[in-house]
Length: 310
Image (cartoon, rainbow, N blue to C red; front, top):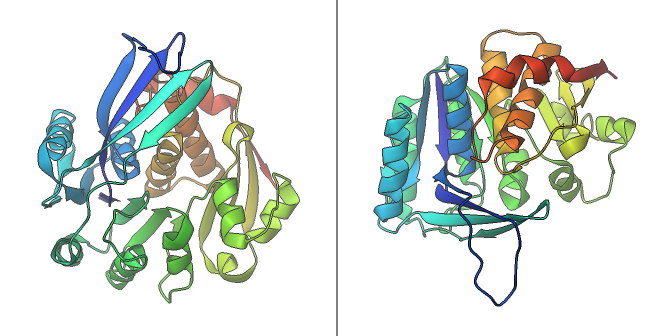
C-alpha cells in the first residue's frame, strides 16, 4: 500500500497559447484543469501504473470539493483533513516553448487542522507502507512538519519518500529521523549545499556521499532534460533521457517519484528502478495534463533510457 501526502493541494490550470500579448485579452481553447499539488500528481501516476494508493492531506472549500470529486472519478482512495479555508489554484501559461507559473500561497492551516493530520497518520500508517510526501508546506504549518511526519512513518516501520525543498527539506535533514529517499532537482540540491556543483557527474555524485546526504539510503537528483544522477545505497548511477517533444514539464518530477515508488515496491533492481522513474518523468512531460502518463508509450521510452554505473 502507498500513502501520498499533499500538504497544499491545488486545482492545476494549464493554458496553452499560440500567441501571448501583454496588457491585452488572450484566448485559448487548449487548456487543462485537474486536481493538482505534487502529492496528488504522484497519486495519479501510481494509479495509472496499477498501484493501490491512498491520498491524504488538507482540502477545503469548493476547490477542495472539485479535487475530491476528481479523485473519486479516477478511483483513487482518499482520506483528507477538511479545513476551513479553500484549497488553492495554480496556473501555468505555456507559450513559445516557455512556461510561466502563477502559484497561490494556499490556505492557512490552523493548529487544530495541523494536529488532526498527524493524528490521522498515526492511525493509518502501517509497517508495509511507502509514504510519499511532496511539495511545499501550506501557510500555518511549521517548517519541521515533514520532519514530524517522517518520525511517525519511521516509528511505524514504513518508508518515507520526500520531495520538497528549502526550509522544509533542511528541517528534515537536520532531524534524527531521516527519509528513505529524497528527490531534489539540481537547483534544490545546490540550495541545500549552499554551493554550486553544476551538472558534472562526479561533483554531483560526490556531494551525495557527504555529510547528512551520505546517511540517506537513496537520493535521486533530477537534471531536467539532461536526465538524473542517483545514489541507491552505495552505488552511483547516471541516467540519460531521450529527446522528446515536451508539451508541459509540470508534474514531471512527481511522475518520477511515482515511478521510483512503483518500481521499488515491486522489488526491481536499481537500474530498473531508475529507468522506470525516468520513464515516468519523460512520459508526463509529453502530456497536456499534469500527473498523467500514457502507458502505451512506456516501453518505447523505457528502452531509450540509458543508465550507467558511475
